[in-house]
Structures are given as structure tokens and as C-alpha cells.
Length: 328
Ligand code: UDP
Image: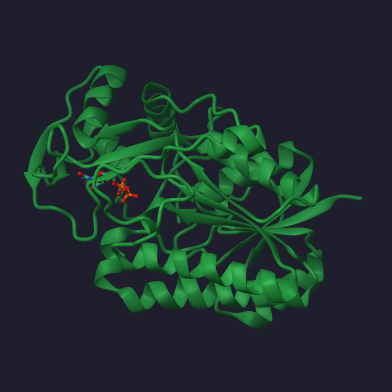
């Protein structure tokens, strides 16, 4: 019998890549997405159910229809700047939406849950290499909302036996090497796609959000991980739960930090073109440095990232940028 997995946010960047990986692993990914920030064209690997996380009746209907064996929960608002400007929206959509989803899953007897959390739950911790044991201290409402959902999963696990794997993502980049899906936000706020817009002449210049951080070149340092490596870990997490293993948190990063300027330097090499830049103020809520320092996912899940070099991520993002996009 085919196993269905409910993928919230399956029409988004990471969720669509996860659907492809799930299909390749023999599952049927059922996308649940409001299309507020997702793209119906990105739903290519299984059925689509349009719906909002805040709509409990719709969630119940979808659980009853597909009887998923597990949930992969990607759907969320995820922009730091927006979160600082609109904290209420982030708490409502992310936290209340996740509460609805968790309660609907439990009511339907679907007790395996794979959750997308974030390194933003750590906040600004000067010079600390972040791993699963690092204290969480979010510095913006996006991080706070994700930390709250992590706690919610633990509480519902204790009472109802909900089983979970929590992934704390670092910065996700790149695109499907076969070009079926890729990163496309409207409006775009992320560094790599914005930078590629500049390379292709769609934008005049990249603004560096602050050059006075306590980092080697003054720009923020992030740890970038390829989206296909990231979603591979999710399939391993699903199997982890199927094998009856314990609730677990895993950091997913490459373990290497790149400053904004270093990312731009690599883009120059990959595209063989200049990237005009201007210097702007810091973006509220940004941490100076977020770099992962754990091999837990590799050691325990057997995760083996294969595409998470900066050169490969920009190469794949650039190919998608030049050939693929979605239209509303
Ligand atoms: N950034 C930047 N200019 C931009 C977009 C992003 O300097 O136009 C910086 C941002 O401040 C952060 C890094 O690039 O330090 C990555 O930002 P992004 O929004 O891609 O991901 P985030 O770190 O917020 O998850």
C-alpha cells in the first residue's frame, strides 16, 4: 500500500523539493498549501490540497481523505525583516497554524511529525558554533515563533505520543539539479536569488545589509546548505520515526560560514560577471554569525550532504534562475 505524507508548504521552495525526494523514496507527497507564498506549478510530485493552516475544518477533511502516515511541516512565514515589522502575523500563522495542524494530526491518529525549525531560534551568540545543545535565544519573532512550535511538539509528544524530528535549518540555497523546481519568492528577499537578479540585470545593485558587524569583513556570516541535501535529511527523518527511534533535534548546515561578501565573490566566479553593490544599514533582527557545529545528523541519521559547497549551490541556483520560474 502506498504511504501518503502530508507536506504543508509543499508548493514552496523547500517543500517542493521535499515532495520530489519523497516521491523518489516511494511515498506519495500530498501538498497542503494556501498559495499565499507558494506556487501551484511547483506541485509536481503528488496531489494538491489548497488550504490554510488556520482552517481546522479543512485540515480535518484532508487528513480524513488521505490518511497520511506522517506530516512534514514546512508551511510558515519565514522572513526576519517582516517578522520584526509584523510579529502578530508570525505568531498567528506560525504558532496558531502549527497548533491547528498538530491537533488535527493527533485527532486523525497521524503521530509522526517532521518539523522545519531554524537556526534563528539561537539568536545572536557571538562567536559560538551552534549545535543541538546550544541554548536557544531568538532575536526576532520568526525565531521565537519557531522555538514555540518546538516546545509545542514536545508537550504534545508527552501527552499524546506525537513523535517528532525537529530540523534546525541554517541558510538553504541552490535548486533541484534537474531544474524541475527551484527558489522563487515574490517579492524576493533572500541573498542568493537577489544577487543573481543583479547579475542578470533585473536589479541595479545588491544592497549589503550592514558592513559593521563583528565579523572578519564586517558583513553577516551564514552557513549555507543545499536544498537537495536538506530534503534528503527529511526522508531519513521519516524513516527514523518509522523505525521507532526517539524524538530528536538535528541541525542541518554545512558547518562552514560564508560572509555576504564571500557569497558575492563566489557568484562572480560562477557567473563570470560583476555584482554591483551598495552599502545599506543593518536589517533589524539579523544575527552577526550563524554557523552550525554538529555532525549529529551525519552520525545518527547517516546524512551525507553531497551538493553543499558554495560553488555548487550558486551553480544550481544560477541554472534555475536562467531557465525556471513560476507565474501566478
Ligand atoms: N542580505 C543582504 N542583502 C540582501 C539580502 C540579504 O546583505 O539584499 C544578507 C542578510 O542580512 C543576511 C544574509 O544576507 O545576513 C542572508 O540573508 P537571507 O535573507 O538570504 O537569509 P536569512 O539569513 O535571513 O535566513
